[in-house]
Length: 410
View 1 (cartoon, one colour):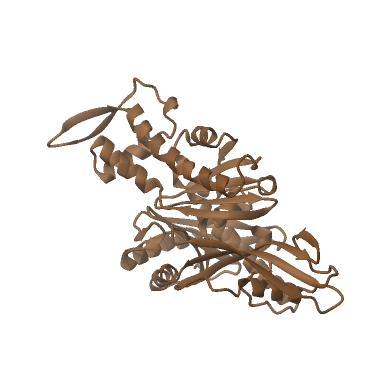
View 2 (cartoon, rainbow, N blue to C red):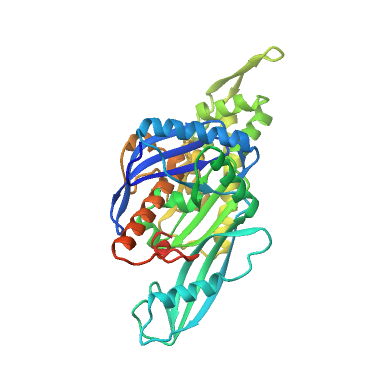
């Protein structure tokens, strides 16, 4: 059954595929989503943000979407899909345009935005997001929206996020084979930010770290805008590999041990506590100190967070993020992750769970691993409302690399 105002977000991770179907609520200024259905498949053909097996990925999409549609009782429309991985690249670009009228019009802003995005991204790369950082009118800088101002010279500093063409095409192909169509691809850390960050955190300055299964994404926010995004090729799968090597267990058993007994901060574990390891015909019954498991996890996560801290320092934000660190994604489920983040960054930290702008089956998505799909649904809701508002006012929606409302989000 098709119902008006239905949106769907699809998170294709390395360890699971998650789909969320919701109904749009609110208006353009304050949009939201009523969660109607959630579907999860543990089968996935994606590794480190790239489709490695189209057939397996297609099956995971079918399974997740089937469960979500069954729970929601509605058919999903086109999907908003998350994308991540080390193939993501970012850069800044400046645009300059002259103002022809007495005051700056929306058309002038669109024109200068197009100048900033009309650059070569390199071979086999597609533009994913183009986000205005600030505008400058003549000698006045730091302007977020120049429409209506008076000036002769309009400049923009644009933040460009691009993806590998093949990675995007294979993701779209997998979704198409599952019987759906990708409406838009959204960078996963940006999608997560819509679900877990408050406006105060964006304004004061914070870093959002999305600890996924195949890659770790991060985004730095300051003055209400995203200032930098990054993707690291280290994540939950590396924790599992370390446990395999350190405790001589299979990968499946390593995942189970991590989920049941894993702790991200070694000092939280009783040194005398022991855990049972899976037995094999050759090894028999074994035990290990839980502290050893925690130490393995602690060391790898500390390394990953250290790489994020290096990037924060490199970008000049060290000591300049008063709202601290927000950790989300599957890795944020581990006990002690907040304590580890506080120690690694010497700043306040919290776990980011979806809570912004959602209603309905909220309990079904109250976990860090749902930050991306919930954020994708919120992204879709805002675009749906913006499109409806443009149609109602008789304003033709501008086809541009820069969405008019994108800067409101990011």
